[in-house]
Length: 348
Image (cartoon, rainbow, N blue to C red):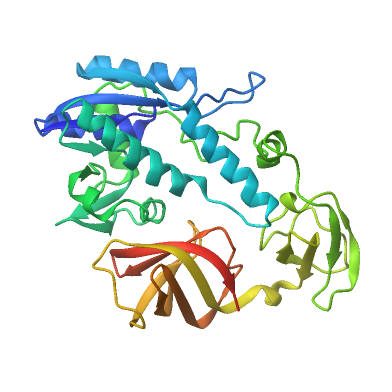
């Protein structure tokens, strides 16, 4: 097949292209420019000029066509949403939206333009008979970020690293003499070049409302400069209260940030909207036993999921889960099968 492969200039996407080529596919490589550059040499985007160069060098070594495509406008809209969510007292996850709208949205349209049969990336995940399943390397599994892919698009999506471990990926890259073989991983949000997400928030519309730190009873504990500086579960940057406290709630309209001891973060109920299903959509009122991840590095927790509307669900956990955060994704699993996911609105 002819496959459009997204290459970021890292080792994972490099080996994804290598594996597909060895399987006999014809490849067209694409680097997505986000239009973001750091203000100093120490500030770097993972979609930087050096990354574009590395991707081009790998494509040249493999002898495949390579294009750098400008997505500055699309990334700008993603950044605007990111900033607006923080000002609303929510904690966004732009990587999920990037996959949903750009990598598995715009790139599929580009694939059609170049006559490609599908799209491939270096994500650690598997597609089996049109269903999304977790990667063999569970420590590297990235299905949390992929629930927003259109169900029909999965049949034309390729994840060549799904059966590999990270160590195996680096060995393959070294054996093939790829320049990215020992390249360090990029763990940060690609458009937060300074390392402080608040720089993006304040550059795109200003900071959130300043206000009070309060306890669970509403008593004032101190003042803060803006709600955009906080997220549920945060411990650093809070007033000294004699014992560890954490952010439990953010009221963006009043400017109140509620602080509690550690056990005050525990919740047993989750509400989510904007749900997208990667399995046949269940009927209203349907209940089932699932496992749910409430953030990328969270171990899936057992829950009873109830469908409450066309794109809404309620989940109840038999064992309390800490720091369920509005704005983050909740992704539903049945063992290694990804059922779907949505955006957390609240908890109880």
